[in-house]
Amino acid sequence: VDLFEDIDIGQPATNPTWPGGQPAPNPTWPGGQPAPNPMWPGGQPAPNPMWPGGQSGGNNMWPGGNPSQPTAPGGFPSGPGSSGPGPAMPAAVPYEERLPMGIYDKLLITIKGTVKPNAEKFTVNLSAGNDIAFHFNPRFNEAGRKTLVRNSLIGEKWGKEERDGNQFPFVPGQPFEMKILCTSTEFKVAVNNSHILEYKHRITNLRSINKLDIHCDLTLSDVRVENI
Image (cartoon, rainbow, N blue to C red; front, side, top):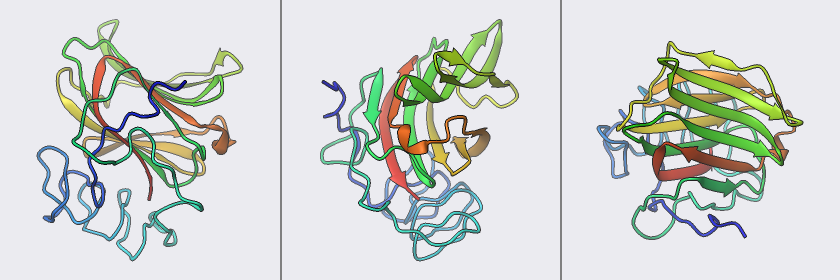
């Protein structure tokens, strides 16, 4: 039994938004202005969500790409973190959400939460069975340093870590908004207005990557899975 299947932590919203948008009647990230539709920081309002540098258009569009419909063929079923009726409520941590269609190009995952004041680390995993396709692990005090660690677990073996201590956008006790965009070749990650890294796919059967889980030293206020 999936303990998280019936969790519904979002409020209904016409479209998600990114901080720094232009005025309109939709919810925004703390400190941002409402915007008519979701957009990347510094972007202009557009009818549908965009990643940085995208162009506005009648449908969702990847920069330089062609218009796409707001949902994948057959639609993407709402998960426990998707928008739904009722007030927003914190989600239990550890958090798990099944992705029935796997992941695919232009799938966007938005995670809103707050780092615990005494945080040592937290983890976001995208998994395929017992393998972990994308392990995202901010560490707040690894030998006195803050480090973003990324890796994959394939066949019970961890691969080569990718590390970055130059960009560390998470602050103990402070809220954050994190976006993970799946493309055909990589994951792109942005936090609090800034695109921070890419991670090339090590598991290339993207449809097999069908579980999102989040755990350790944070609280969650909203998790959304959608298409751009």
